[in-house]
Every structure is written in C-alpha cells, then in structure tokens.
Length: 235
Ligand code: OGA
Ligand code: MN
Image (cartoon, rainbow, N blue to C red; front, side, top):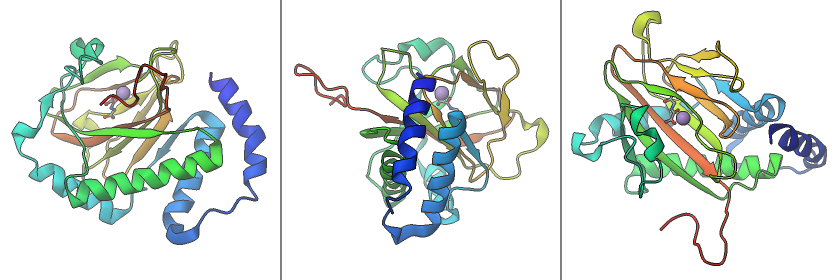
C-alpha cells in the first residue's frame, strides 16, 4: 500500500506544483508543505515545535480545564469498534467535538491540513476524528497499528503534544516503528508543539509508560467508504 501510494503521489505531485493554494495562512501552509513532503518521502513526519503556538496553548489550557468526568478509559471505543485495544492501553480519552472555541480552532486547523494534503497528495481524506488523551504516571499504549488493511478507513494519523520540560527519564515517548519487523523504532519526546503524522496502516507504534502526566491529542483522517447500505462516518 505504501509503495503504491507513494508512486501515485510522486507522479501527481509534479502536476500539483503548478497548483497554487490560497495563501490566506502562509505560515501554516509552509508547515503543511513540509508535512506533505515528509509523508511523500517516507510515509511519516515528525515536526518539533510546529503546532502554531497560540493553538497549542489554547488546546493545552482547554485540556487542563476539562472535567475529569469528561474522560473515559480508552479501549472501550465507539460502538465497540476498537475493542481490540482494551488490553493494550491504559490512558484516558475525551472525544473532540466543536463545542468550544479551542476545539473549533483545532478542527479548523486540521481541516486546513486535510484540504492541503488532499490537494498536494491526492489522499482523498474525507473526515476527521480526534480525542484528547491523558496518560497518568505508569500509563502506556502497547505496540499497535491505528488501522488494519481492509478493515478500516483510517488513512492518516496525527498526534500533537502539550507537555513542557519533558526530561529524558520522564518516559512516555512515542516509538514509531518502520514496519512489523522493526524492533528499534524512532523515539519521539511528547513535547509541547510537536506534530507527528503517519500513514495509519503502515507504521506500528507504541507509547512507553510515562512517569508523569502526559497530555496529547490523537486524531485520524479517514477516507469515505460509504456503500449503499452504510452511512460513513458512523452516526
Ligand atoms: C493513539 C496513539 C500516540 C501518542 O492514540 O493511537 O498511538 O503518542 N497515540 O500519544
Ligand atoms: Mn496509535
């Protein structure tokens, strides 16, 4: 899938170079262009201090203010869809809707990223879902894929972090593996403003146990797999 996608992308990207995108937010668009290039070249992107500072702070403050009862144990999932994860993760999550200025700003930003990536890479991203995640001390998420071939319409995963002063022995790194055989992986420190994006079916990854509170958003861009008897995304 990755090879196929990247071949397709490489062919089409030459055409899109002449396609100028509306320049209303030039800072973000240069970031989006870097993310697109990373994905085109290697299927994933790790960009420290990349999330616009105002947005990062707004989201951090919003997550801190969320009532504890807005968070659910992860792994229960929506409609039982992600029951697979129940035994492998211990974080708490809160799904994002457009019910606050902070979340609207986030969905606006991810919407712009989606539009940009669709224009640049022809990914056909159709919808987006995301949640805040809180890992308390000792929490982890074992090695997993975000999507399984033929089973899911999640195409691109995105994770952003809201943690300052993360020390080397605080744990809680994201480890992104190149493929199912990779044992070493690439460690990502969950620092405020870091944006990680990767093709959901291609990269196994895990969250190492954190020794302190760890705050983030994880999200997924999906393609539309509607067929006549099924409405997508799920109601
Ligand atoms: C996830 C996930 C990674 C992270 O929620 O599926 O892999 O670094 N999160 O929080
Ligand atoms: Mn994941």
